[in-house]
Image (tube, rainbow, N blue to C red; front, side, top):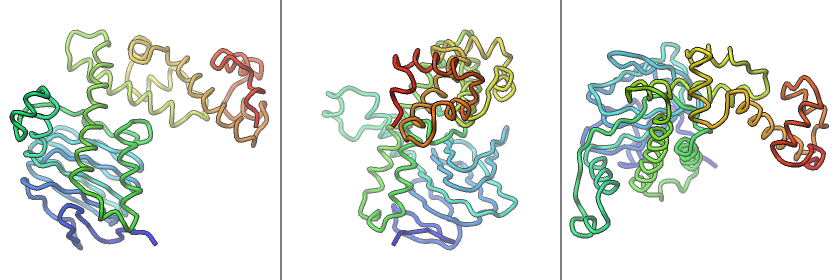
Length: 304
């Protein structure tokens, strides 16, 4: 038997269950699980929030922008004057979310910032800073923090989930989100731009291209496709993608396709020719050449 959270909102910190979405106390932490037709929700003066949508779609609205979010996506929202979630179709959404109190966040900032000696001398210190997370919907499968959220979501369906400590889970998620964020800032830093804000915006658009490649690995993918998806010119996309990922977009597409090809071959379900066709290679010889260059061995070596 598993837990479904159907038509209920459950907070694993307080162990309280609600029939409607609760309003959050700014001084408390929450680990919410629900599967319900949430039409609208406002979080005024919101805390740091980490939201994973397993299923369902909707939009998050801030004062100056809005983003769509849907199945297997997650987003981190920074403390602000508030946001609103809108789901006009009243569809069911299956969600796992962490709401982090200012105190836990400042304690975490202190732990991540100061030396080991300072941690020993003052174990309960706090640092309030303006660290900023990228408020971008991301595919959970492609990022370490998203994979952790997926795992916690799976665990939350098990009957023994209540025996896990929600505060420890929140700390683990904060650590993973921070690691991914620092990696993103490092990658954005190699983009040729004078302003940090321009680097970050360019990187966000590259992430759209990156996810498009992984989502469409079975289809032909052109530079024009990636340009349109990312809202970057082909020249800007080419230069920035190569700087961040160490490969041109075309090279990266081929690498993802070849990785998928190896997985197909190892299952033994398809012939080499069929795998080549499935992944959109126009010529078997070209596929074999690209494959051997990537793995040092021909496709036949990996046939199950």
